[in-house]
Image 1 (cartoon, rainbow, N blue to C red):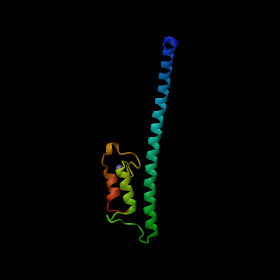
Image 2 (cartoon, protein in one colour):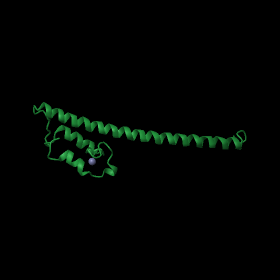
Image 3 (cartoon, helix red, strand yellow):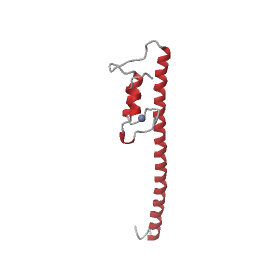
Image 4 (cartoon, protein in one colour):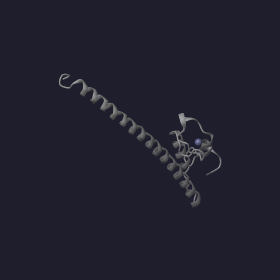
Length: 117
Ligand SMILES: [Zn+2]
């Protein structure tokens, strides 16, 4: 095999593969950052949706703000779930990822605070 495929060709082939791999790596890394942005955008939209839902329930004022056994509104429970999934739900960092699941006092206030939002 090595006799047929001379060393020069072998070397060129490996160099070509190396180049293609580098290009592929760059594309992968760009995909990853795009996906990261989409994931954060999605979280921000979910938060906005929950705020709108709770505002709507407030406006309708027919007592239809659903309360679970825990005493939390459904909207707050959804925000709590997002927070536990690793996203900020506070107005400061809205929808961005919590680095290493660091706790955030602003988020906790949004979820567990006294004031109904
Ligand atoms: Zn936060």
